[in-house]
Length: 250
Image (cartoon, rainbow, N blue to C red; front, side):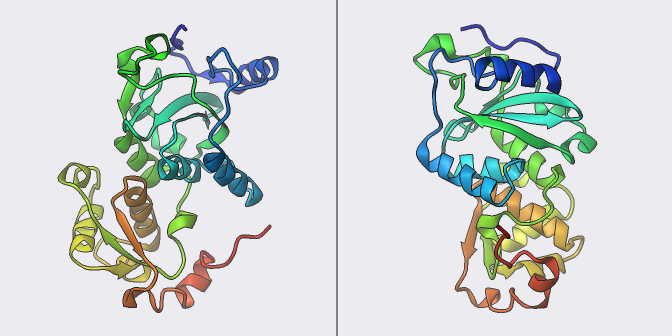
C-alpha cells in the first residue's frame, strides 16, 4: 500500500467526492471494509446524539480513553487535514506535521469523519501498511496544541461537573505547559483544587483553567475526584453561569 504522499491538503469538495466514490474516508487505504471497535463507536454515537460529532477534542478524548487508533479527517481553513492517531504508541501519522498549523486555523478545526485507520504504527509487523517514518510525529504535543488552541474552551464532558482535580505530570509533559499554565500544573501536583479555585490563580482564568485540564486529561496526567471536599461547591453559581454542569440537550 502506498503511503499518502501529497504534501498539499485536499480541498473539501475533492474529499467529499472521493468519499462518495469509496463509501469511506478517502484516506482509508485498507483493502477491506474495516470498522472501528464497538466501544469507541458507542462513544462517537453519544457525541452525535449531543451534536458534538464535529468536536475534535471530544473525539481525541474518546480515542485516548479507549486506546484505539483512528483516522480523523479535520476541516482546516477550507481544506481537509487527515491524521491517524495511535494512542498506545503515542504517535500520529500525517504527511504534514500539525505543528505547522496556525492558531487561527486550530481555533476553527472541525471533524469531518472518524474511521478505522488505514495506516499502521511504526514497527508494526505488517510492513506494507506502515507509512514513511518522517510522517509519524509525537502525539502528546498535538494533544496539548489542540487543547490549548483548538475550538473547545470548556471542559471535556468526562471531567466536568462537581469535581476536584489533582495532577500527575511528568517532567517531559511539564515542558508542554507554557506561561502561567506550568505553575498551575505544578500547584495541582501538590494540592487538589476545583475549577473555580484554579481559575483564580495568578495568570489564570476560567477558560485557561478548562484548557489546561483538558490537556492534562488527554495526556493521562489528570486525577478526577468527585467526592473530594474541594469539589463540594463546584456546582454552585460558577457552574450555573457556565452551563457546564447541566445535562446535555437532546
